[in-house]
Amino acid sequence: MTDLGAKVSYLALGTGVPVYAPDGAFVGVVEHVVADEPQDIFHGVIIEPSRDHHAHRFAYREQIGELHERGVVLSVPAGQLHEPGTDMPAEQVEESDDPVRLGLRRAWEWLIRPQ
Image (cartoon, rainbow, N blue to C red; front, side, top):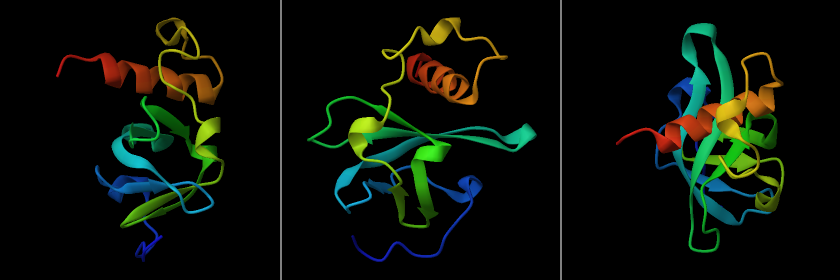
């Protein structure tokens, strides 16, 4: 891992920032920050896969160890991340469900929206 720069808030985290596993292995890049900014709730990030990981992944906020200007470090191995839309029927999750499921639903909604 190279110098990741200063720690930042999710509000300052940009797309294209590299994401690393706890052991320093490259996982992919931040494609989208999933948050409810008016409520100041950070759900996590959608990770665009690297060559080794063939599907988008969702890192829930508790699976993220550190956010930096030039890198995100996960607190769990990449294999423990969810794949939005396939781990559960994301479209059926209600607002009252647990925060991980809500984050997955928002990640799924972002991935399927028209570009």
